[in-house]
Length: 119
Image (cartoon, rainbow, N blue to C red; front, top):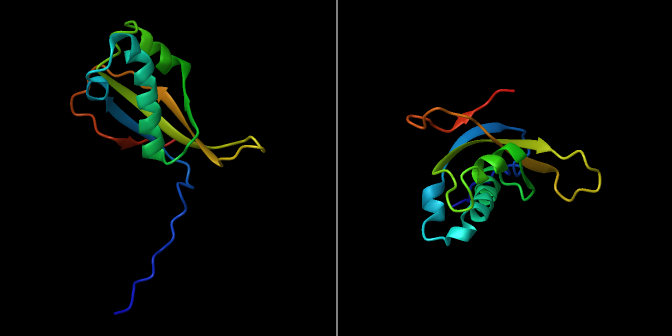
């Protein structure tokens, strides 16, 4: 038997933007009250890192304010975010790409799916 040749895909080389709904309740279940909002930001970073395959993740200040809006104990149960994979303009940067995470205002989370955004 001959092994099939694998096509080598570049690791997230294309620039893409997607909208995701992140269920924060399941990521923060059992977390101490005083650690919930900081952990929410860490969990969003981890989610973006896995979804976009970049180590460099930057969280927008509007999203940070939204997560902290109800205090340290009660971050929102669900958050709609826009993940944009972009080219790094910095010459001495180790990573070629970075992910920008921004908040998307929605009235209701019912029926929302992951969607690609055309810019």
